[in-house]
Image 1: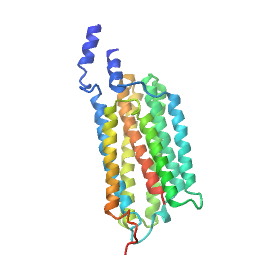
Image 2: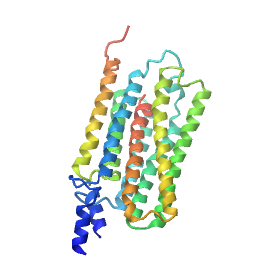
Image 3: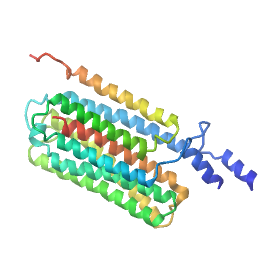
Image 4: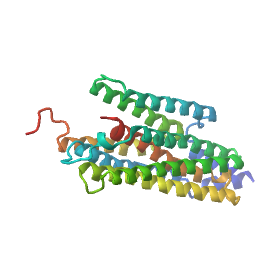
Length: 111
Length: 200
């Protein structure tokens, strides 16, 4: 009893987890978004910048669904969110900085 | 009894002043550091993209349909993982064993796809030393595959514990920590799949 209370306190710290039905609904959404992602690259004539933007938005949605529901971050303490989102933000900054350093954003053709 | 229970809660060595379990906080901090690790690898891949002086290039060699199947397998393994955790939490150990083993097998399937892909690429002349694409591609996806392999071993260890009757609802945190790691390798693949395979 005490142990389960401690466990619940340690795990939850702010509410219950998602139900199995929610997990399955998320799975369906993830499968559909993945199918749409793959279908997009076969659409002829879709402008490259539109395709890239759509693919990134959809992968961010999938990422957020897994982290929020399957990793329970939506229901857990905010400290855990900070522990993850902080380094994730640094990782995104590292990616952009490396791309800038190597000239990935140059608009003019390189000689 | 009540006072004994209360003192047990107070003196649980795994609960810190934040009210959170140290092991869970440690896992999230580890996953944060892994974000930076994979961020560096993805950043390097994107920085060198299109700068190879010789082929094979990504659009010549990447097999989108095959990788889509393996990406789907890994994505669905995350569903099996949450079902395993839910089963352990409600003390349904029969289904917990089924879901844990299924998750491990889906993960092993993903690794199998990756081994096939790597072998195929080597046969087509793309190795770690061929060009910048080969170096960055094999390093990035190879490290991810190594993480998945580690996750499969962890899952099989939990499954073995469950088979021997040494895993129960009191061990839900052990399964949850493994699940956090497993979902993390899944979300890393979500990023890699989009950035490496889908974006032209």
